[in-house]
Image (cartoon, rainbow, N blue to C red):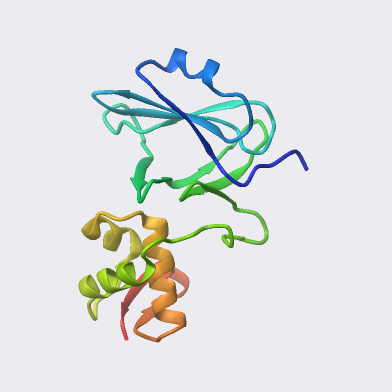
Length: 174
């Protein structure tokens, strides 16, 4: 295994993609490219392969990821799955790299204001199935945080029911 990192490191914002490379020094370093709107999230691959990834954030150009800066933490949704090069698969969630390997380990992620977030989630949940991304959109919250909050509400306090199989990722009031 290469020298995988567990956290991203913010190296700043530039207006053109060509200016990003000089700011990144090590795996997990990222630069945000913004010109009026967020254009791309440029990151030195966190698995240590040495490659630089450009993640599109502008839905006007092609398939785009969502960029979140909430509570001074950076998240990108959905996951980043490289189908060439090192073929790594990871989630960027609240400044933490969560590797999508055999064992999902999100123990390094801190969901701040978690009690308040759970209250917000419950305020929009109904008896109908809703995907956590729909709930996140309604609340203007990070989907990873909302999925975590929904899972907590289902598994720990039985306030929600979590779907299975084709309904994985869906939740409703119990």
